[in-house]
Length: 149
Image (cartoon, rainbow, N blue to C red):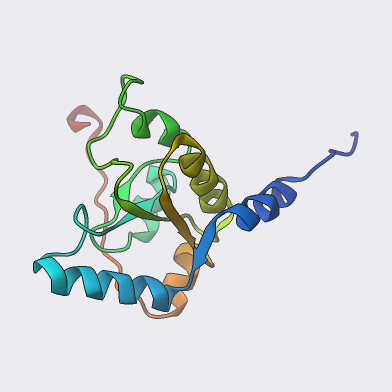
């Protein structure tokens, strides 16, 4: 097999130069500030936490409470109001913190959202693994029956 010009991790390293990375503690602080401001979990009025992992990862491992889900393979389409797949939790005026399992996919996706015109985008250093290791709260994501999807 031929060698690639750039590996997947090279692309991640390039993306990390262009996007903000925040720690678990930074994210907790943002969510606490948002909660105090509006009396809710903070999503949609402050920081939107965006889980970009595959749905099977959410079913198996759970998710950060109140995170929205936008799988990496659909994020550009769900974030574009003209693409026909738009999800209403996307708004270029909001702040987004993306995470995946270990921060590779989230760095790439954060760079894409920023390139689309989302002005305040970051990704979680270490991803969901770092959240778990830091004792962050995790909620179950129940698997839906196929016919209910």
